[in-house]
Length: 385
Image (cartoon, rainbow, N blue to C red; front, side, top):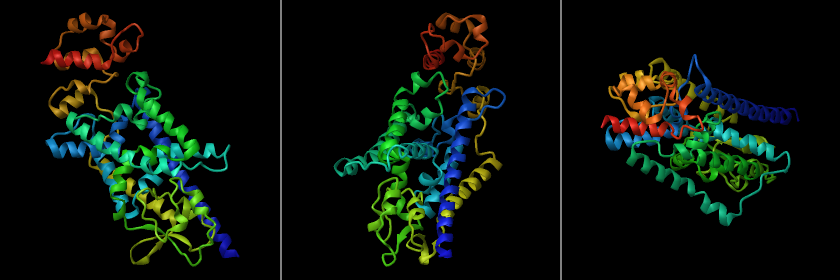
């Protein structure tokens, strides 16, 4: 009896620590996003520098063209490397133990369970074909990003949108992304991990390489009491109770089913040579992989934490690219770097001498301005032709 009690405490502790890790990552990511929009003394890089999916888009574009995609930092490639290393061990453990958008959905699902006993299942006739939509999303946006040389998914991305919730650009650049974010979170209240199951291109990518992971969830049929606690706990509605091993590409390795199992050594994480590991090890080792990769990348100067100024970007690339213009840049900076005279900006956009020295977002966010950052980029592009 003492052993059973200790087993339950161990599993509960595993679930709590996993959730603490998830929330800490969500808080860190949220803080970076807010500081990017509102920070002055130290401004972190934008969300694109912290997105492993951007590494997929940019990687394929780099292979196809031999050039680096705009808006992408090397940090995206390092994060993608960490995701793949984690997948080699624990399959989609990034989705279940790291991803902050997944955490948001999980928190909204818990909110839903305050009013409902459990998340509702999507009817199979809808659920099964809908699971393939995320693979379509993956292919479409990777192909379009390769064709156009930019992150085409950005305006539709709920995570990029989340990082712009305090930005005046929210409803000018991320209107569709905001709708997707709201649908994903409200959908998770009822159906749990709505975006993960049906729309996430990162999840689709990991689903394609899911089977190469060394560790997977296994079930001991002899000791299983068929209570279905594992099925009830699974956020992506896998029928764990009927499997001897969970091979599904939908499994996000969150370990919720393992932690929910009431019988010791019945549901567990198994690796090569039938090696069993504690479910907490999945969270801890996955986090460790990210800490090590990001730490090494930071030490060698390959991880972009701080936002580069327009001058630094030009110095690094050797050319001025209008796509690098951001709302925090001043008209004077653009003028000094391009040689476009002050008078040309004033004539085109009706700005004052005082506004010329200020960030361009101060002018674009005025209701009467009639132009936005994209209009300025296009004007500069034409002037440089």
